[in-house]
Length: 243
Image (cartoon, rainbow, N blue to C red):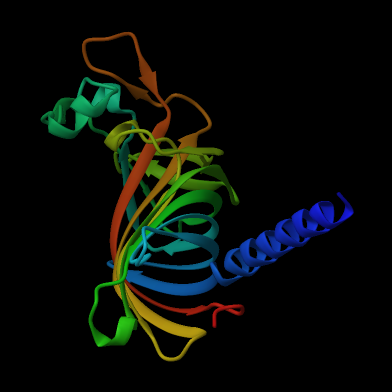
């Protein structure tokens, strides 16, 4: 009986050690810089990937990312999907914009900081000795912080706004707050260091101190305004436990 208990403990210890080592190897730390028209961003991230299948070429993961965004003379347009497309579901993806409901707030120097949990996916094609990854990630939920800014509503009225506090990935214009996403190619220089480049799609959103926008044909008023940025992204990543 003692021998059986000993063997069972040994097996459990071995399994736990193997799992712990595998988990450690999946850790990845990254830093990116991003540039677009009139704006710049950088991001620090931690992510963890789990390989799927025998070859583990498909990887599914999660992570956390701190994004800092800076801009110059940027326009923020009406954000809520119920005003921009008339729908607050996946239907918004396929609906035409309701142009009459769009108003704009321009900020001379917008600045955002947002910390979000995210979804991370990657695929390693069987080429270049497994040094290449194709990946995509997107923020899912978190919060934003930053100083208040004074902007011009429809190029006339001065308004004060702050970054929308809550960030949430919903569907298209139904998204709430500020969210970062990347499409990229990653190349491993060695077992632990990699570089990556690609495309970044970034939402940033302000909430004005008062509901400044009157929605045509309705008694509703709006206080959320969004900028959608497309940027070129370059980054470096480090996997400290990767063999």
